[in-house]
Image (cartoon, rainbow, N blue to C red; front, side, top):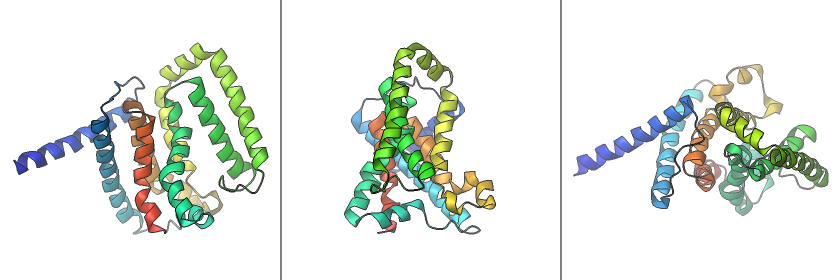
Length: 244
């Protein structure tokens, strides 16, 4: 019985890995959705274990030859109290990033509007004003107004040309999915400390984010947005605890 349970566990993990590989090869936004909460929660945990395994291998390989410096989470930790930091790492942060990058993988005018608003807020903070999106004592109104303007324009066109947008999403979902993964990884780089070598090895240095975005996108399509947020939050537990 024990051997059978072990084998079945291995088979489940292999099946999940195959599902991700097949999805990456041919991203499909029309996967049959799973609505079994218990099975979905189990699947999310299995995907976390898969990512954790590859993450440990990545740590062993990368730390032997590269100094990655402090992870972005350290900067966030320095700005927040321990309680607020944990709330951000486990709840607000995952929801924010999933809403930006995974919510609108399923096209709806409201979804893409939310994604554009939040992404514009983060980018305008980081690239426009040179501050973090958590810095709420500088240019808050300006950042909100800029984000709201882009969001309103997006909502207007997404509603008016809904059929065209939907067709574009369905036709180009492969590239939309790939783009969200790459941009998600890029935004986790510290551009102030970006060297040529770090840029050259971008895929290796941002492997955790690339893998997380790859799996998270599949979870969002297969199980739903809440489960991609849950997966993201679980992945933040160990990094958050490591800097407390």
